[in-house]
Image 1: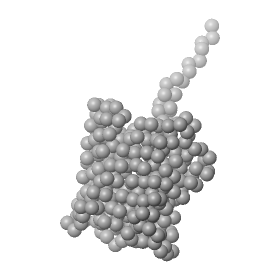
Image 2 (image 1 turned 180 degrees about the horizontal axis):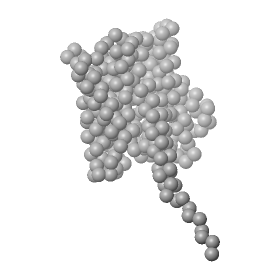
Image 3 (image 1 turned 90 degrees about the vertical axis):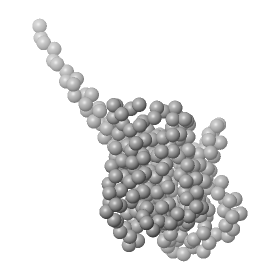
Image 4 (image 1 turned 120 degrees about the horizontal axis):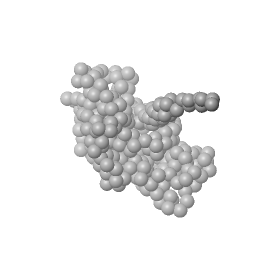
Length: 308
């Protein structure tokens, strides 16, 4: 009787796991590009854009890109998604963008960016209440560690803390945190990709901003060449491209792990300050940078033994 060949079944599972890990790593890297792009907002706002027009800046960053995405995807909301897209558009765009620009105008870039570092903690709390996720003490601990690290990087003895700026920064952070959790909770409807969802939210947020901009800021400011480049950068790389990558990541990654990537935004803002604005790092800031990056990487993991 001829012996049957032995099938190499042992190599299938490890290979599949390796491909899955590689795919997750690539997804994390792509998602991380979004907060890195948002980290340029502070320098672009202060160096290129007209002052005292946060609503106009938010409008240009959202509505043109949103309409473009809808035109490209040719997908409109249906049913309950008309009001869901409106809610997400206000939280992630219509409220968050002007508060972000206002914070950048009222506070030093480092201080403004630090306020966004608390977003992972807000997301972690909302994920328990809204998504019914079991809290990951591992990720919550690293979120706290990351916020401390970012604070060491961007805060210093000369940091200015204006009450209005701090309030705007915290409100913007809370608005986007709720938007992140609701995006994960509602999920995209079947057959609707991140590009279409981005178009819906940017358009809804932009339409929300139109009357506010007209009432509170009136006529648009004078725009010179550098301002045009600033608006183009924020509307494309920092607008629909970043949001498409972000929504794609939210849909596939754990919500708290995704929120930890927000730590990249203030870190990028601090690095730009060093490379482009003539600032310098102290020993404490280098330690904070190392701590924040370590927290960001560790927070993407969730060891079995650390799960509560």
